[in-house]
Length: 422
Ligand code: AMP
Ligand code: MG
Image (cartoon, rainbow, N blue to C red; front, top):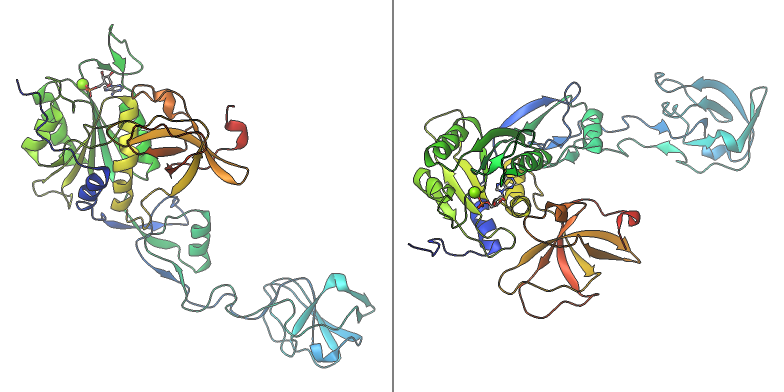
């Protein structure tokens, strides 16, 4: 019996490069940002402002529109303009117009004095000091110039971006389609979490965790259920993904056991780019593409064979799958940010391959500090709990002392200090 993997060991960088080379952004669709939720979608076009904003000079505060050349002399208040009223008034020398925030500046006026810095008696305005020319006036195009690029293709839409689309009059916008990610669990020992589990069985956490991770990455998740360790059952499930999804994630069945069938199946149905990575946790992760018969899907199925251990499967997803899912959606910044963090506790590196350890990073006394989430076993899902970063630990023999600095991938917001257990 052959106990050597036929797949050469590739580095993390090489694996990422091989995946990226197969990923091209998927189709584009139009979304009605006024009536549908567009949050989290990635913009597929550059968006420009058409008119300047503001389109005419406007009052920045409530007060009086005046001529600065009148200095600190009293003025006669001749009219009032409110926001939304049409321009047309004129401020002559020695006069003022009462004006509200957002109202157009009357002709002749070149300053607005804040109401708080004035007094008005029987239509006579007393000012505390001479106004400066231009004071409290929003000039044309001050916020957005005519024709200015306001949002670039590849931007992920959040509150500010949706506000900007509305500001420039774009009720509809082109966004990338959400990739459909099918998730298949494998294993004779794997059971639905809410049913009976036979002795020795495990509940299927991977499928549900991976579906949630895919949704968090902006995709639509589709469950393909649990496939027994049977080549016909697993082949049928993979073929189903060809019809129904952009991406297939499988869990389990990629190790060296006699019932690990995913790698040979992917090789039979498509092209395997790698089947082993110098990476912990998740060495047996496999990546393949499968061509489809002419179908609605434009590009080949991207298939990721993720390891069965829950931590391995989620960490492999984070390091290899998530960037690919973001690239598929045209995200201009598909990678997580990398930061340098200080180790709170000493750490033993793995001897032979880089390890991505789960840590909680917080801002303490002017630096980013990484706290371990405890034992890092690949079956201990609790080691993912609360983690907002993956610490990249290069292989070696020497212990990293507390206070040493390493790189980390930030996978979530910095932890508030009260989250750190001391
Ligand atoms: P495998 O890679 O198929 O040998 O699986 C390795 C180990 O991962 C198994 O022994 C199970 O304990 C665990 N495992 C496999 N699939 C799942 C799953 N869907 N959910 C939770 N644990 C799993
Ligand atoms: Mg298995």
